Length: 161
Image (cartoon, one colour):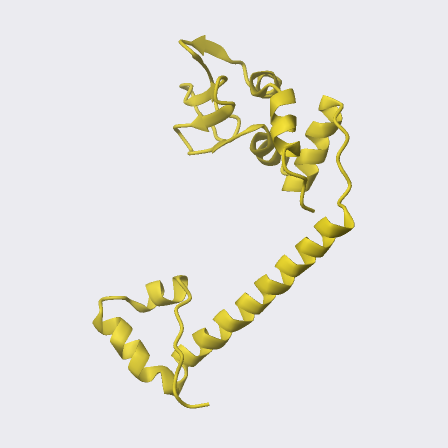
């Protein structure tokens, strides 16, 4: 589900991150920031910070980082849409319904992503086929190892059909 422009910004503006995090974490003011023990990993020394004026959190211990939506997603193990719906309900903000244009745009994007995935898989398979041997040797000769080639899903457009 795609949300209209501005809806997520309005939601973030209506939900103060410090009060949201403060329900789970005892926060102490340290200068312009709030600090506390990270709710996402075990620690004894506070490494979790809420930056109120920029409306984000960051943990220097585990690397957790995000905004109010990301915090709810991580803390309550929710997907993006469920977290948005939960926060919107708490903020008294109605979740907009997708218009026919929004649904059509989302379907077009899904179709394009499926086509892109199919093309990527095709060229990947070509690289690892017998016809892709020269391309594989070229990549290996340029210093790429097999793990890197697979991780970045490199492929080859070979001459044979």
